[in-house]
Amino acid sequence: MVCQVEIEIAESDTFTCVFCASVVTKATLEEFWILKATLELCHKATYSWFVRCDEESQAAMLNSPEIRCHVFTRTQSMRPTFFTPEFRQIVAEKMNAMEDAWRETNWDAVIFVDADLIVTKSFITELVNLPQRIVLSPHHLPSALRARSITFGRFNAGFVLAKSPAFHDWWREAFVSRPDRFMEQACLDDAPGIFDAALLDQRANI
Image 1 (tube, rainbow, N blue to C red):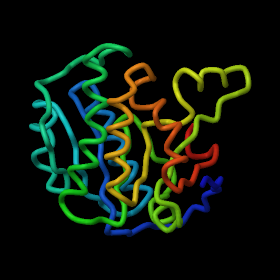
Image 2 (cartoon, one colour; image 1 turned 30 degrees about the vertical axis):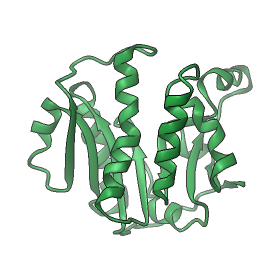
Image 3 (cartoon, rainbow, N blue to C red; image 1 turned 90 degrees about the horizontal axis):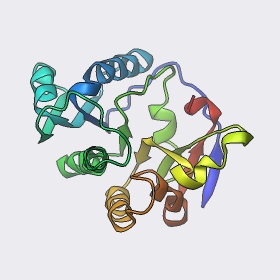
């Protein structure tokens, strides 16, 4: 079941039973700090994080008690290109970062966000209060580019909100079982057929 959602922005979010998850390497560390700072600025709150990271990123985050790191690789100073084993290794850690959070306790929701996102409005309380079990962010492409969705997937795998650990388990299995599809993203096309899903509108994926 899928519904289209238009988000009304709240003035302040202080939802405490939500964990954020991300994957960070040296190549994306500066972007992660911007993501974290903009999320806190817009929500007027500090959220806890589970981060899968490389060795150098872990060292940089040691003084941030709200960040819990799990090292999965040695320092990666360069961004790997698409379709390389190195890139596939990094995106596979998205599900693991979400799993790390769920293993801690039974949160109301876990939000995965790519390190290169920038938050411009508060959204967490609004999305967590939706009745659906997952929240996905479609690619709102112009008509001339919509054919890309066939190859790269309908949804942006850089943002996923899940209210159940069943989602990341399903996502991992879909990713591993279909290596012919585009990385961790194209398999999300099937998610609304498995989970009750809310889809964000064009303001959420610029």
